[in-house]
Image (cartoon, rainbow, N blue to C red; front, top):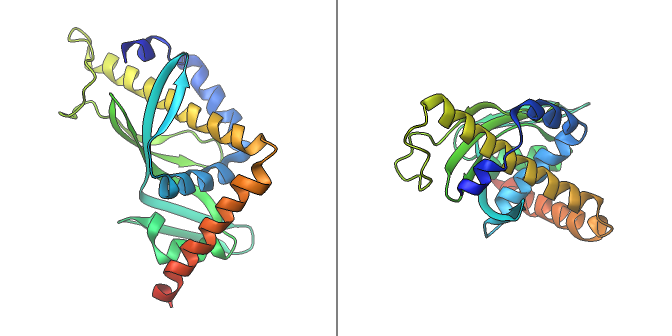
Length: 198
């Protein structure tokens, strides 16, 4: 894992990368929710020749909106599995803000809130005090150095998630495979929850 820390995105480029992702923000956050709820295994990414595994989950806040149906905010518990979220999604709303978590193997669990406009994480919680963290951050590193390294790890993996989504989105099989799977997930989520909502 120390090799990953040496191959991280330079801090000065992080803002540029986040800003460039904003044009697909709502769709990406909706896909991220889908990926979190439908993936049965951890996702694996190749980062400069290193295999990085991560598990995604939807945390305790989700905002769905559309231009003509208004905004729907769901807080607490597991909003990604709630009847309210299922009905909002089925009605045509998409995710505009999402609090989610990444459990990155060897580093620990990170959580952040992301807005669709620039996908720039806010309220990033780092596993700096996680006693189960298996990564050995240098004993001679200051708390600030550790925080900076963990922040870069999060951004690196988050960027890989976005890259993975883009590869799927731009692939010729998107419409017939991934988009159909996404629509099926939305229908199933609604059918499972609609009776609880009414």
